[in-house]
Image 1 (cartoon, protein in one colour):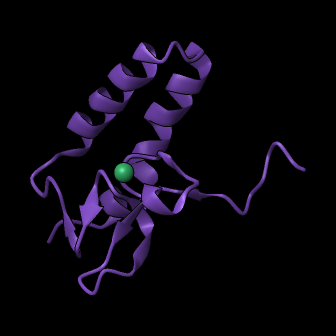
Image 2 (cartoon, rainbow, N blue to C red):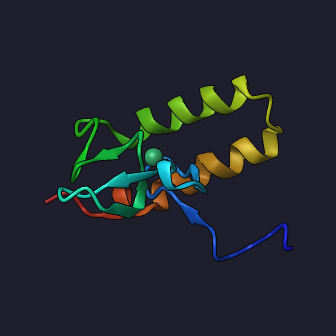
Image 3 (cartoon, rainbow, N blue to C red):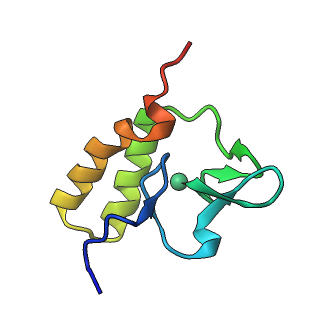
Length: 92
Ligand SMILES: [Zn+2]
């Protein structure tokens, strides 16, 4: 019964909390992928492989504003996204 659990999964692309089984993306063999959500990652591929981090941030901010989340939380997400696994990987 903790409201602030560190054991929680977050999508490593869009920072969405992954709670239910259907929230998780899927690997090529159909098993759940623990790193990404079903919106970002399906069957071993990113649904939008050309997406840039700035686009992801503005998309998430728009969704969060639509959900009337507090500005502090939106700012936190904005700052967290560039550090997620998908975006930290240096482009070679
Ligand atoms: Zn995602």
